[in-house]
Length: 312
Image 1 (tube, rainbow, N blue to C red):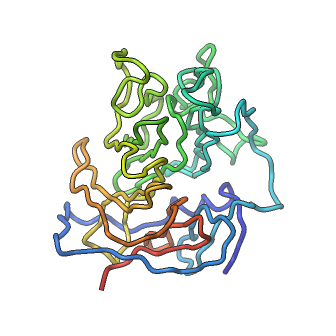
Image 2 (cartoon, rainbow, N blue to C red):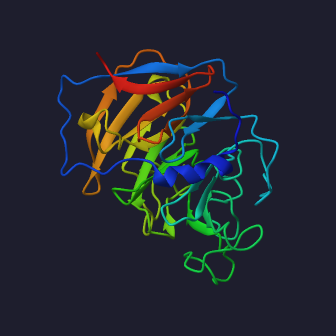
Image 3 (cartoon, rainbow, N blue to C red):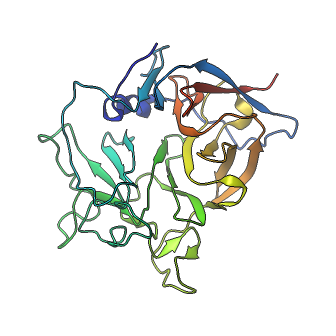
């Protein structure tokens, strides 16, 4: 089924997806391997996959979007790139919006660290109260002079994809790097006001400087450099489905240029059981998605949607 929807419309289903976590950590057997199977092809720039709870259908977001829509929020874009790209309802029912720093190289306007602008941030708004929205009273910067109340987190370069893991109570943010490092940040889902460091830091390194003040900055859980053809991280989800219990609790991610599939499990503040999965050539991965059962999917710039499955 080929359906064009906006991310704002379909994201509400995500908070109900997934299953209960296992009783304890599961170490992936070394002989266990994954593969992918094509679910559908011939799409126009697919960017997201989701499904309502209890629904066997898949809904695929294409870049063209949907023509019956309501304007919620607009932000002036000073340059042509780094626009973010995800709207996602959180476990608290609030709408979270990822916005890039406004573009160009190195964040020349300093938007990432400027709490007076919405660029380079993750926003948190309430679309059930107010028209077109209201600002939740418990947002971290509400009432602070010179700060926008919509801001939930800041210091981000281009959070193209982020995800909530409900059983773990965590927020995973895959932030696209400038020229050296891609990163994944992990914090408690209810922890607002976090400064992820851009453009003071890129990954765990000071940006364009041999030293910098890292006090108060949240450092990433994992980083990788641009070697091997990597260029732009594509964040995914924590696996909470039932078909592949061996990888329960693993967070999956890819890279738009390198086309790999990797995962790790978050434990005690660190990334453990890091794995590279040999799934063959899958092209430029634009996004991940979940169905109603918590099974994982990937979308490709080739117009295909893949499902992650057990290698037979």
